[in-house]
Amino acid sequence: MNGLTGNEAVVMKNVCKDFKVLNRHEGLKGSIRDLFSRDYKTVSAVKDVSMTVNRGEIIGYLGPNGAGKSTTIKMMTGVLEPTSGEILVNGKVPYKNRTENCENIGVVFGQRSQLWWALPLVESFKLLRDIYMVPQKDYEGMIELYRSLVDLESILHKPVRQMSLGQRTLSDILAAFIHNPPVVFLDEPTIGLDVSMKAKIRELILGLNKEKNTTVILTTHDMGDVDALCRRIVIIDKGMKIYDNDIDHLKNYFGSYRTLKLKLADDTWEEMLIDEKTTDVMDVIMARQKETKIKDVKILEISTEDVIKKIYEGSSK
Ligand SMILES: Nc1ncnc2c1ncn2[C@@H]1O[C@H](COP(=O)(O)OP(=O)(O)OP(=O)(O)O)[C@@H](O)[C@H]1O
Ligand SMILES: [Mg+2]
Image (cartoon, rainbow, N blue to C red; front, side, top):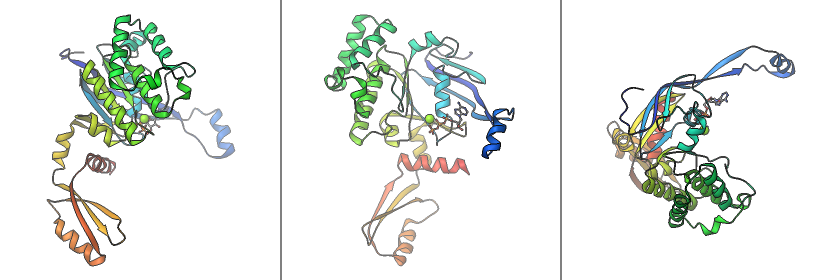
């Protein structure tokens, strides 16, 4: 690929991924017909996506359900081959050099564990150390780093199958970093976790990124993850990239938006998003007061959550 600086961890150029899926027909007759059918349609999961992620960056790869995030991650990790376009991860084509690529990357899919179910975590770590041929000194250094970042003792000798979801996610992340890969992919790492566990996971990711300068590509539906971890976000929708810039830039763009919160007579809070450029906040409050009693009013800066909601809504129109 031309025009690279050498500081890129991931480069994607005009990447597309199509899936051929059977056109399914309803009912028993339809199912039988489908068995012999050659009636395929093409689903374009990723359409012409280009982006560059530099070393040490943590980027949020966001988009609504079905946008094509996981498909992109699968291509970057070499699980899927793009239909067209080019990808380089740490300078290598992921689906061509799969073994080599594995050494370059760490992967966590929040929905399922990559660890050996019956083994205590430490045994999984040792297996990974041997698979990736990590020098003993580096391995021990990594374990030391883990000790400084999390309560390692409470999970190290536990079989993965006896762990809580939070402990397992923590373990999965530690396992993904054990061979100190330059790039780590985290696909919804905080899914299903409670507030305090989410905070721990975010701290861990930040700590590892800082200590090892690891590039992190994160997909999530939790805007708390984005606020805590990402300066830059890339948003895709229906397979197409619709935003790629700093999160602050996006908030400035929506800088005139405010979240207006009204406490009603029954102590519930009503929330609405208002553009101060086009709407007078006082007018809205007065109009609402005519309909119902208002006990309290709060006007807040727009949150990341609201910004992203706004963008998803806009692009689906
Ligand atoms: N193996 C497959 N065969 C056919 N279609 C697929 C396959 N994998 C994904 N798709 C389709 O591609 C599109 C993108 O799916 P993908 O899993 O990448 O979305 P996502 O952004 O990760 O969504 P979510 O937030 O729900 O995880 C969807 O329409 C999905 O149905
Ligand atoms: Mg997904």
